[in-house]
Image (cartoon, rainbow, N blue to C red):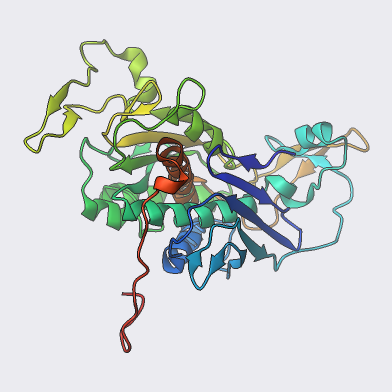
Length: 378
């Protein structure tokens, strides 16, 4: 089972849903970078999504850093983080039941019947904890470089939020990055909440989409043909549970557009910076950043574990059996998928910067000195 990603930084994740511990290791993250635990803890909290619409209860997903960090600063060694699983269990569930639209069948075939199938095993949502941990670590380092990563819930069902514009201001970025279910429009958010409540009430689920922006990345990053930023972002975003589609800029709407309608024309600003008048291509030309915000749209399928009656296949008896989820179910991936997409974008962006600049040329970050009596979190 391959759970390693990256060219210039390498991310590995490990663990199963009912195992005692799960976590990850990040190799080649620059040394001398302060670890912002407040940013990381906020990201882990946002991963729970809106608590009214997710099966994940408020819990203490406390990261335990076992290597790579000394006195709050990265030291160049591989950074390994562990999360201890309070719901770990040695109890086997008995017969393997193939649930609709789950990975049960393909995992059983691929791993010759030995895959841990309890609550999804290695395919469970818990594997995203280390992704968020390292994503927030990378996002904070990028912030020191003047690069900001932000996402919002773009759509749930037929309810659509506004799209990011050509220019994305810092106030909007800060607001969205602190919300459990961020939308640009507050009215749209209310309508989405109402829809999620109605879907939850009947024990069903619904699809959603997240729009992500990488703001402030200069032109020239990405290594085509096979390691362009689009390819790298797609390769990691598809590791997230429920992702079925990814697009950039205008995305699938290009199919109904004419070239004259979607041209991103270059010009020089008063400050001497080269920009484009529009951003239909989402800040990327042939996989290389052009200096405009990189815009990525991620579509999540409806979660297949629902409370409505469904059919499953018993692998032992080969009989079709009735299924019912007795625990609380997740209604939509998008609320927690928001911080997951941000995390992925941050990891991939840092990987691209390391490729472009080289490890020894990465900028340093001075650790803030705490003045006696000062609150270190402000």
